[in-house]
Length: 261
Ligand code: PAF
Image 1 (cartoon, rainbow, N blue to C red):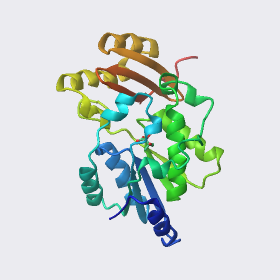
Image 2: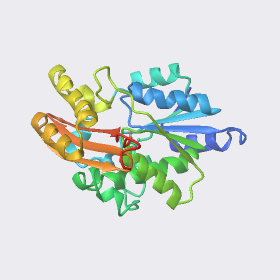
Image 3: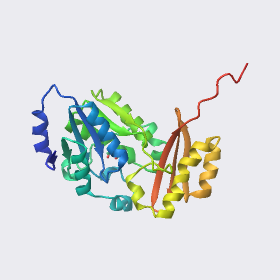
Image 4: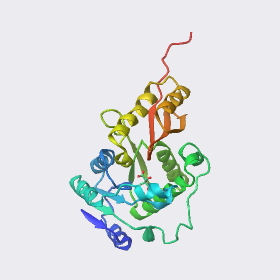
């Protein structure tokens, strides 16, 4: 496994990769867990060459404290990626990824303003901007994202369509703890008690009869409910628990056939 902290070295390396190879890419912010590793495994199975990026992207954090406290463990991440058979890891710093000091930004004006976007101003501008930069650097044939960040996944699909990028965006199922909590790097900041409490997010979303009932039940458990909303065939929610904002989504129950005559 090769690691690249220097993007000009990476770009030269990329130019010399076999043009026949299919390149798979998994962008991450590090502090890897089983959810990330499931993306890497799928990328490994479907591509000749697998690239992972580890970059805690400052432009997508709307709270300075969240950026500061975001978990970081590069040594463990690299060991996990080596074990998973990754070919190359990009570890750029902000100065290299943002030579323009974020003067150029990608803004989506509809979906990015709703749900998480309504509560985290500028968040999706930061995500879309860094993802476009990383796509241009890696030039992957396929890129892998978790369905936990369902809104992010929809916006990245939109980015690829809007800018005619020749990249297949592959969404991968949410990986959950035994009691249902969706895996997330930020979960490491929850106490044991908070982790148990956090599991009720998934339970309520799957069991409540509708979004309104889910909101009421969540409000009784969590410090704040940002939203519960149906989007396409999913029910999405974001809640605050102690120091951590949790997001999750579940498939909407399919209406039973044969109800009306
Ligand atoms: O999902 C994430 O980890 C990040 O939003 C991403 C896609 C790596 C961009 O920084």
